[in-house]
Amino acid sequence: MIKSLDRITYLASSLEKAEKTFSSFFDLKPSKRVISAEKNYESLIYIFENMCFEVIEKDDLSEKNKLYGFSLLSDDLSSIDISIISEKNNRQEEFEDKVQLVKSIDIKQSPDFQLLVNEYENLDMDRANKNNLFALDHLVLTTNKSDDLIDLYEKELGIRLALDQFVEKWGGRMLFFRTGQATIEVIDNKVEGNDQFWGLAWKTKDIRKKREYLVENGFKVSDVKDGRKKDTLVATVKFDEIKIPTLLVEHLK
Image (tube, rainbow, N blue to C red; front, side, top):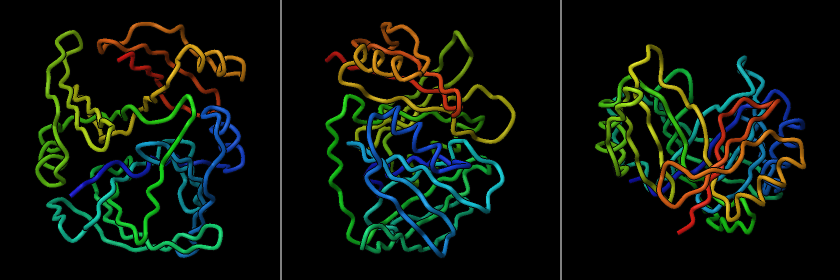
């Protein structure tokens, strides 16, 4: 049912300022500038090997400068039957001289972020990226209803649950769902509140070179150290303008 992640969406108060920050961080220009007139938004699309990163400016939303949500890619929405509240809708996205039809299911997992499943008409799947930062490693959600998310993600959407473990040192359950060469990491530490879209981890080919580039361009980056996963190196990045917990990862094997 689900082929991969489709997009991660960041809601910006200023598309111009956000473009400057993300283009500098990614060392990459947006591949597309998209307009959806009937949905009242404009967005920039950065293309990576296993998903797209979308920066969106939308006038009718009050809370901005945050991770707004993520979407999953399906080639057949009619095969998906969601038990929780959801809404089907269509939109047309215009870019360059093209108009693309996008069919979506808006899954009401949490009022604090948007979860969509998208199906495209004539989707261009060329996601080649030759940059040092070339793909998403994982995204992180927090919840206090991990059993409900297993029902939704694994049983209803068909996303593979690769690992389910309890981490004793901080008293929480961790779920790892794998789809399309990326991981949805869910942390359940029973903290009250709605599900939250918390942070991102990005794959790099050479983490030390990427760190050097980011420091030279004004980003705050920790020293490189061994990752929690065997044969990985990691470093954390702090943005002044954009509050997204961000990790760089290099897989050594």
